[in-house]
Length: 271
Image 1 (cartoon, rainbow, N blue to C red):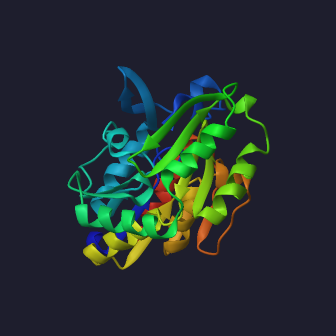
Image 2: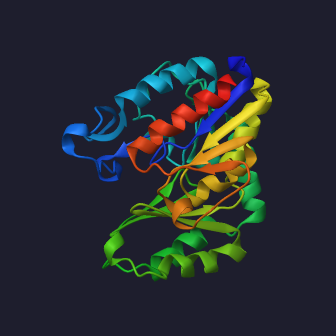
Image 3: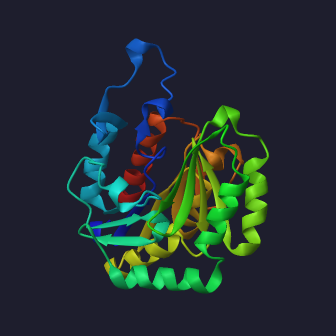
């Protein structure tokens, strides 16, 4: 298939790249894959892929329009150094920013903020509620991302089991979605979606086939919008038993799932 006609939109954290805590290296030490660091933060290595995944990703970038698609802010995304040439397009802030050659498309950003203002309760209202109901016993950080959404960093083992569900029930009628990913809890406006930004990239590139991968609730719309998608055997979607006709649930977990996802991308793009 022509590279320009295949668009690959992939979530990054816990889908393609993995922190040390998320690697899930359950095999004997001598059989563990060699790793490549792809992100350094505050002078320390933070995120990894396998060396084989690095090779596959470089190959995939030559065989498709590869679009990193993340909930990270632009600043957080720019710390990542993925193998292969830079991507022309990238999606940050869960679709709030569409980067073209590293620069945010201002018209796209305005259209997103306009929809949020029309359809959702204000960010300040949601932030105030989250602050009021969060317990300092398990809350470590509270942050606003790109003036678009709020997220918490928590101690998972101390987090009450029903807290996220209760917050989601409160947020839903206000037009907000709640997602738990590792040690982070996100509250995100519903119009802020990865799928909308991916459709815009597909329109601009003339892509005829869209492939996607992701592990969290915030990736569900991305997977449903793709012609074919994959989710790893770990993460929020796996824990919920989430399935869709066009999305394959892989058994691989941890960093080896990222490697397998890249294999599936390449095989489908070449078909």
